[in-house]
Image (cartoon, rainbow, N blue to C red; front, side, top):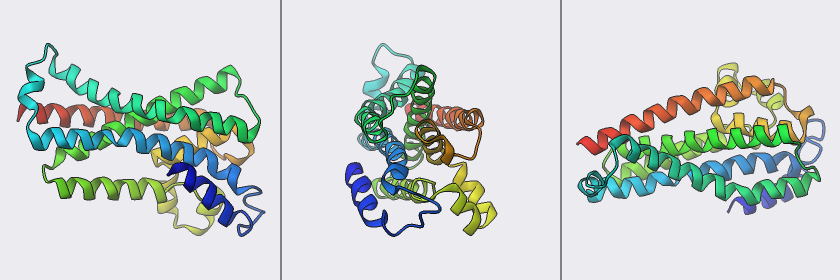
Length: 227
C-alpha cells in the first residue's frame, strides 16, 4: 500500500506540481512515505491491544511472571520493533532512489528518529485502544488519528508552500506533527536544501512527543490491567 502511494502519487503529480517548489516529486515524497509506513506499522499494535481489552485477557496477562510495567513496556516496544522492521526496505529504497549511502552520523540520526517515531505511534495507538472499550469507537478514533497525522503533515506538501498558503496556527500544528518532524529529518539527510529547520531542534521536538506518548501509553495500559 505504501509503495503504491509513493509511485502512483509521484506518477500523477510529478508533471503537475510547480517546479519552483519541488523539482522531483518522487524524491520529495519518498522520505515522507517512509515515515508514514513506519508510523502505520507501529500504530497497528493498537488493534491487538483492542482485542485484548474486548476479550478480557487481563487475568491471563497478570498471571505471567512479569510486572505490570514490564507488560506495558512490552506492548509499546513490540509495536515499535514491528515499525522498525517494516521500515528497513523503505530505507533501502531511499538509498537506491537518492544514490546516497548515509554517513555514520546520518545513519545514527535516522535510527534515533525511527525509534522515537515508532515508540510515539505505538504508544498513541495503545492510548486510543485502551481509552474506550467499544470496538467501533476504537476503529473510528484510530482511523481519524491516522487521517490527521497522514494528511495534516508535510509528507505531500513542502514546508514553504504550507507556510505561505495555510493559516499560521495550522502551519505550526502541521510542522510539529510527529510524522512531519520525522519526514523533515529524513529529507534533511538525503536532500539537506529542502529542510528549513535545524536538525537538532527537530530531534528535540520528536523526543518531546516520544516522552509524552510513552508516558500516556504506559498509564493507559496500566489502567487497563487494573480494571
